Structures are given as structure tokens and as C-alpha cells.
Length: 137
Image 1 (spheres, rainbow, N blue to C red):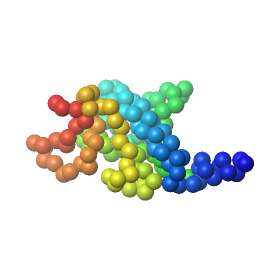
Image 2 (spheres, rainbow, N blue to C red; image 1 turned 135 degrees about the vertical axis):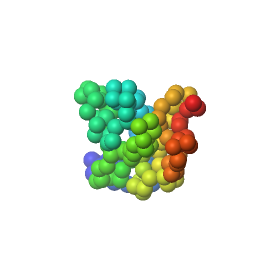
Image 3 (spheres, rainbow, N blue to C red; image 1 turned 30 degrees about the vertical axis):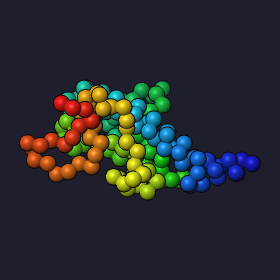
């Protein structure tokens, strides 16, 4: 019985557990954004890595930088890229492990809040045209 629970919970792909892992990833991403913004408020610059953010997350907080949508047996952090001093990309790359594909999971609920979070694939921009933000200027 425990073997079956392990298989269905951690090994099997394509079932209800995939959606549970995706839901956990979305929840974690939504909880991670405020810590990234706190880092920005403290340092007036976005971090280079999520490990820098992890250093300011209190130990008793269940927020993690590990991507819960990773396939069983794999460990990876959420996809994070600092674009410049005011913009960053944060997402789960989903089961395929490739950023900016259909199975990616992005934070939601930040459309009305001004953050440096960029939800779309960043394009090469000139200084006159910054990347789209999650909220209007």
C-alpha cells in the first residue's frame, strides 16, 4: 500500500498529482514574490539569485525556492532571472524543465500591484523601452 502511495504521489506523471504539484508551485510562487519585493526594498536592487532571497525568508515560513512541479527525483529552483535593477522574471518551468513553454506556471494576482515582475518572455529592449511590468506605470 505504501509503495502505491509513493508511486502515485511522487512517480506517476499525467494524473491528478500533476495538478496538485502545479497548484503547490503556483502557491509558492505567489508567496515568493513579496519576499523578492522585500529584498528590493531593502537593497534598492533585485537579487541576482533566488538564494539571496532565501536568506531573508524566516526559518519558520513555509516559502521555498525549490520548484515543486519538478519531475519526481529531480530538484531545481524556480526559474528566476534578474533583467535589470527594476525588473525580473519568476516562474516554474513545469515538467518539461524549459522556460517560456505551455506548461510554465507564473505568479498571479499581481496585476494591480506595482512590482518588477515581468510575466512575458523578455525581449531585447533599448533603454527607452523597458520590459512590460505586471502593473501599469
